[in-house]
Length: 312
Ligand SMILES: Cc1cc2nc3c(=O)[nH]c(=O)nc-3n(C[C@H](O)[C@H](O)[C@H](O)COP(=O)(O)OP(=O)(O)OC[C@H]3O[C@@H](n4cnc5c(N)ncnc54)[C@H](O)[C@@H]3O)c2cc1C
Image 1 (cartoon, rainbow, N blue to C red):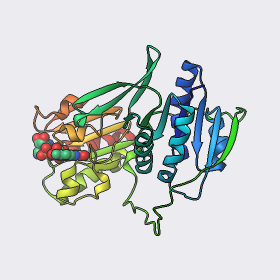
Image 2 (cartoon, helix red, strand yellow):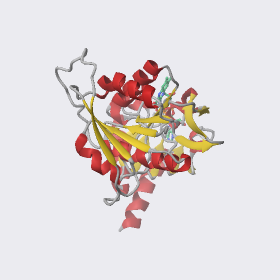
Image 3 (cartoon, protein in one colour):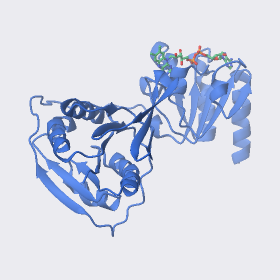
Image 4 (spheres, rainbow, N blue to C red):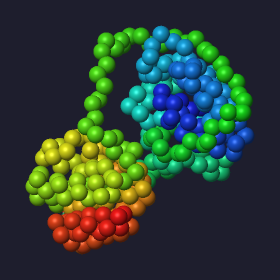
């Protein structure tokens, strides 16, 4: 029976993929199968919606080394679709599996649904200028960014099948050293509130205006690419957009950001977008729920003060 498969090396993302998979599998009356390289996570994956968990046991700890094994299994079992978390390693694995089995790969889908009995996906293209809808033919490979779906509450009473499978890994590449990325401060991709600054800010010393507003709101600080890559006023992991971080906060406030498509493509999933810019024709206002046309040097301190008063 063609099933829905999910995989991520990050258990939290696998649980999010299971929420999507559960919905599709119920709709298509098929089985939902999670793959893991970490056998210890198997029971939690059953609790989060999997009917079956396959724990792949090989000599490598790197997901991409399992591409051939996963592809062989997919050729044999022909799942309807394989959903893989769009982490760096997940994207690498997905591309390899799709190439080996010569099937289509949808990258970074933000919506998946069933239409006329087939699975349909949406993804952003041309830097956010268009949405590409694709109809999948089995077995299709789809990568899904973290937090696109919310995991269902785990049910410890759920039962399912757990299978351990010894597989051959591709050991041609060995990793001799791992250097973790050292983040300066919080991970903005998971921040609940963000104050973002653009080139409307004239000098680095003026960052204190942004910091004051962020502190009053309990928000993290993000920026546009120029602020990080050209001016170096903030680290590179703080810039948002097509080539930067994708964010999903409940509140995003921009200060002096024009709203070019490359930036806006990273903020689309924000619940509420508030834009402050001097130029009433700035494209950021088209993306915003609330807009203030004016000088950030006047508005930001007023806003900070008003928030401080409101939370007193
Ligand atoms: C391939 C590619 C990938 C890219 N990826 C990214 C990406 O991931 N993220 C990203 O951010 N950019 C990215 N860019 C760059 C992007 O195209 C824009 O150049 C950038 O987002 C603009 O940044 P900005 O809004 O800070 O600056 P600007 O476009 O210069 O806008 C500054 C804004 O500040 C306003 N302003 C000026 N003074 C004040 C004031 N006193 N008060 C209020 N408003 C004021 C102006 O009216 C203007 O709207 C990419 C570009 C390319 C080509």
